[in-house]
Image 1 (tube, helix red, strand yellow):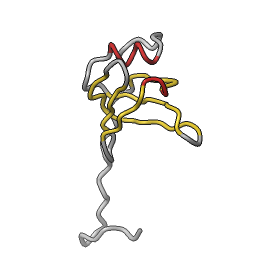
Image 2 (image 1 turned 45 degrees about the horizontal axis):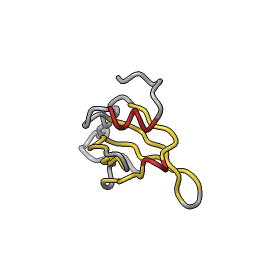
Image 3 (image 1 turned 60 degrees about the horizontal axis):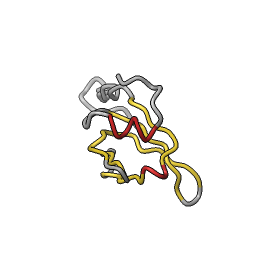
Amino acid sequence: MTPPHLPPRQFLLTAEPGIRVVVRYRVDDGLTDALGYLLGASENSCTVRTRRSDVEIPLAMVIAAKEVPPPPPRRQAVRREGGSLPPA
């Protein structure tokens, strides 16, 4: 994992595309996070592939960014005797 001591903009500009990151940035009504895989960064923005979509984030709005570990493996549904799924 990348050392966490770099300022967010420098981290994003030097990070290897494909690493999993979380980026905290300003939006109209506060702050939000993008968690996903860094697709790339330019002088003005970075792009993070989240579970829902690719998010382009202006670097001027970024207040924090760091590399994060891979997601945990998904849990499989536990089957009851008789082959049916447990009630929700």
